[in-house]
Amino acid sequence: MSDQGDERTTPGTEAELNDDAPPITLSPNQAKRASATARGMLIATGATIAVVLPVYFLNPTYKAETYRRDIDVATIARQAAGDAGYLPASPALPEGWSSNYARWVSGSSDGVDFWEVGFLTSDTGFIQLTQTDDANPTWVAQRIGDAQVSGSRTIGGLEWELLDAPDGDTVLRSDVDGATVILNGEAALSEFDTMGTAVIEDVRQNAAEEAERLASAGADGA
Image 1 (tube, rainbow, N blue to C red):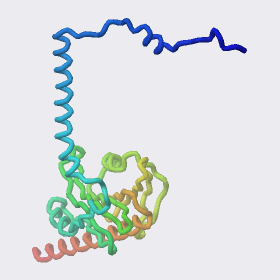
Image 2 (tube, rainbow, N blue to C red):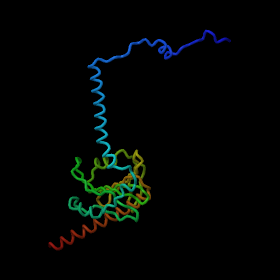
Image 3 (tube, rainbow, N blue to C red):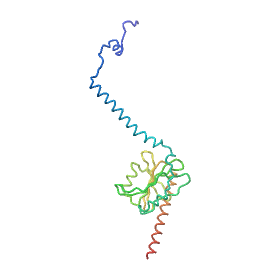
Image 4 (cartoon, rainbow, N blue to C red):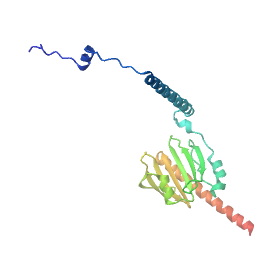
């Protein structure tokens, strides 16, 4: 079959063949406004970069070593004891574990003050310890967030509620001698076992020492 008579042109080709449209021109006022808009965009972009760059360079890319600060938890716990009314937990953990923060949190809108410590495990995991003697259901729900109960786990002779968070974190909650303890983070369950056991031992030891101190003070005052 012959291809004669089947000549076609694309819209672009036709436009090029018939490019009789007049050029677009701007009035002096329009040109002035366009120039001002462009300058404004450049100034805004420069201001944003000026703000972002210092923050970027002051906060380097995450590495495990970046947060491995090895805080002296026991010392900070003793400093917080006056505000807490008890000695917060500073668990003795195996070689290779460290802490990157420890703080007493008070003055929150829910009225519950608590002790909070972050621990880095020897296997690059992370577990946060939260402890309070003034917990209520609302506070516990806020701390646990959207984590859903998936079972229970026995650690240090106590039963802990086991929850799974949407972000993949593990959450464990239990009551230890009157204190509500929550462990959460990303680590192996065996490391949560290590942490939970150490926390129980420390909380109980602190409670026993406090009871002994009060008994001694009572005897001296008799």
